[in-house]
Image 1 (tube, one colour):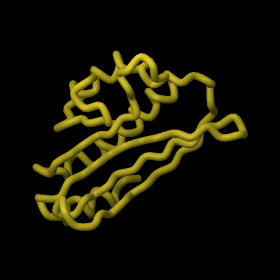
Image 2 (cartoon, rainbow, N blue to C red; image 1 turned 90 degrees about the horizontal axis):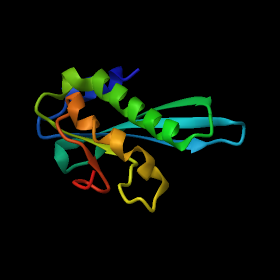
Image 3 (tube, one colour; image 1 turned 90 degrees about the vertical axis):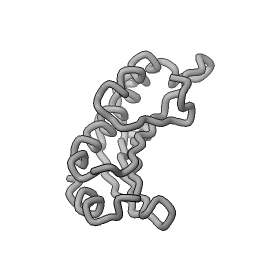
Image 4 (cartoon, rainbow, N blue to C red; image 1 turned 180 degrees about the vertical axis):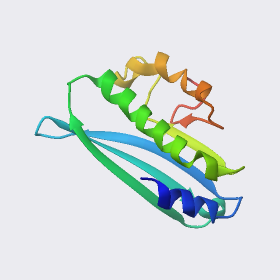
Length: 130
């Protein structure tokens, strides 16, 4: 599924950076649309190439499950392109807020485990606070 992204990464400069993220949208038909992207930032300063995959699944009405599924899809995308990365900068962006005032806080404990999956670096809007 991510073969085009993998090939583009292999053919890019070692100075390029790769960003991965997944977000979800609850649809009116009882489903959730999960959209995962891999962004290849050429030379870490020029334009970028964006690779996208969208999967629709049944919504179980559970934010924790939805956020964990977003993390799962981001991790799966990473594992698909891992061998092509070389020494390129990698960031995984997660929609998790450690502030208890926000609903996405419900998966902060699980998100702490993500760095132990072998990533080069993990980032979120709240880097360093997870």
